[in-house]
Length: 210
Image (cartoon, rainbow, N blue to C red; front, side):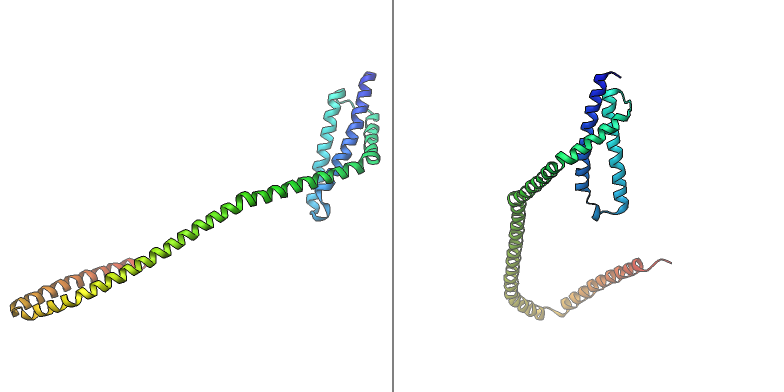
């Protein structure tokens, strides 16, 4: 391995050490360990370390074809230490500022959505429902009133018609009266038979099969 490759490897591993510190602090910030179950923390930690190892090895592979040397670990440790001493405080403040900015933007977008889209749509739906209910009640009241008027008119008309029918019935000859009574009884008997037959069919249909 040439001297320039070794130098580039050192710089890369110092940078990866610092990047590892950034990733570790970011991971710790979002993990929220006290509120997580232990097995979830274990799986997240395992996944984090595996990903970090793969990233470091990939960078190492790009720089020197994946050759491991003792100074590589020293460079990683130096990069991590440099981040801890020089950049950690600044990065944590920057991270909190970014998180707060994202939360503020999300809250603003949420309020804007509720104000410009959600509430108008809900209000429009409520207005349409109210109009439909109002129209339904008005139509029901109108139909009810019309039916009352119709029944009242029919009642007024029916009273003289009923009296005329009674008078005509009294004036009819006995033979015609008997014929009408027989026809009425026969028709009533037919309707009664149909009713009894339907009742019997319904009972058979409802009867549970053994």
